View 1 (tube, rainbow, N blue to C red):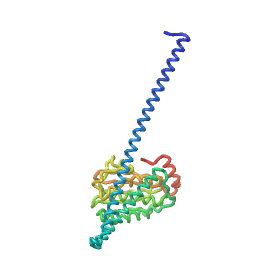
View 2: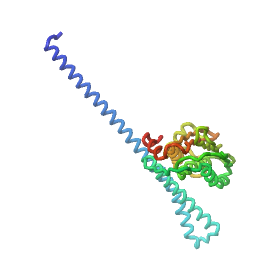
View 3: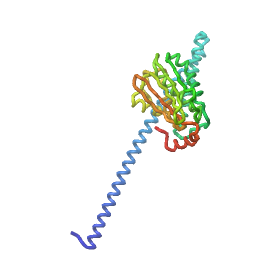
Length: 294
């Protein structure tokens, strides 16, 4: 055994060398871990980018093809001798496809604004009862054509809420549209709104549609999440309606809850705080600071 000053110096030197080697090993391990994490994140970002481009390309191509085909037929109507009914049908096809195309573009812009924290809300008192009534009325014809019963039960004393009327209209339009799209002929979509004891309001949108599993709900709440919509009516959609609705509800200081059972139906519950809450700008900044739920 080495003892005395010489032994102490050698022991200290060995410990310093060991500590240095251990420190280098830890740093190398951290560097490899960081490199691996960065590579995984880069691969995920690349995958999401590819999925985004594929989904958007599909959603844009479908209505554009309809517009091109229908407008070509209209331009050749003299040679083809189209009837007035045919001309009207082709014109309606162009109108519907252009409207859907505009909706896709607006949804993409909306989710971009929400995720970048640049979404602006108009802060004012909103007559929720009137807003819901108008939203439901706008879907009466769609429900009738789909042979789906659209019922409503809006509390006569439903309180006003504070927020952006246009954005709240977008929330309920998306939710009612989804409910109708996933409900089979002969089914029912119901919209109920009641006052909350502590103030504010609760809106319940239920349907007897195809329903979702727990995994499907997670996908549906993810921007551009694509479910198996082979059983749904109409176009597949961008997968943005529900994520946009949830983000907008959060920005108003509210909450949204989604429940569903396969082949039974889905239920979406939206709660909104009363008019005496914080100004929506402060709520927005607080939510953005915490990060919108993903």
